[in-house]
Length: 247
Ligand SMILES: [Zn+2]
Ligand SMILES: [Zn+2]
Picture 1 (cartoon, rainbow, N blue to C red):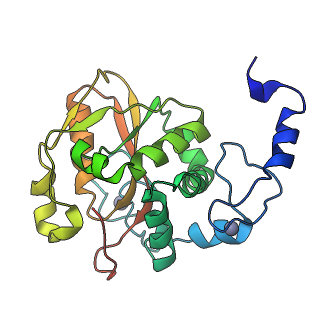
Picture 2: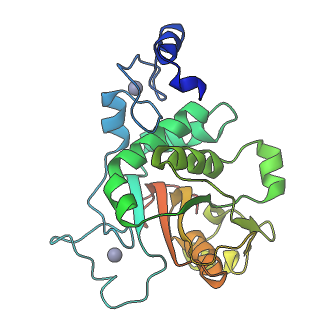
């Protein structure tokens, strides 16, 4: 029997530390399934987005379809996006990266799970995996936002989180490079750390712009035998939107 199954314990814990919004600290009535708490105003603010193509994650056209994806090889099997990369979301993503950013990461992941629960169910995911950060960068930062987000998404979906990929080499940050150089920058940058044969994987990262990093991760997992690779990101920085994208 787990601690959380003990009758009344959840209530006592709620009294000792009432559930609070991970973004603004406001009291929230109750936790949502999957954890990651947010008040309604924050949830609305940070889930705001344009209608997107569920395959490539680019803004959709009038009919909800996407010309880019018609009859073209795609870089991944589906992409779930929480929000456009506006200043308010950018601030939360930066907060989530800081060492004490777990509550913010969990709140962002909770919104992502809530928004795309149906897609995640349709995709029949077996395992959730973070886009890896090179160990040296991780050591310097003490945390990886992708790890925290992936762990929280996995909790929300009731699935395991595994670090399935490792960086072979440290690459310059994608946001320091022009768009056209990004794919080359991450080419062959990853390797699979374990067997993924037959698995349906959900890759998680904080921000995607060109999607070059996600595409390279997917290629590596497919080569290692993954049956399908989907991706979920907190924010999609659209090309030419004037935002300062991460990757
Ligand atoms: Zn709030
Ligand atoms: Zn598309």
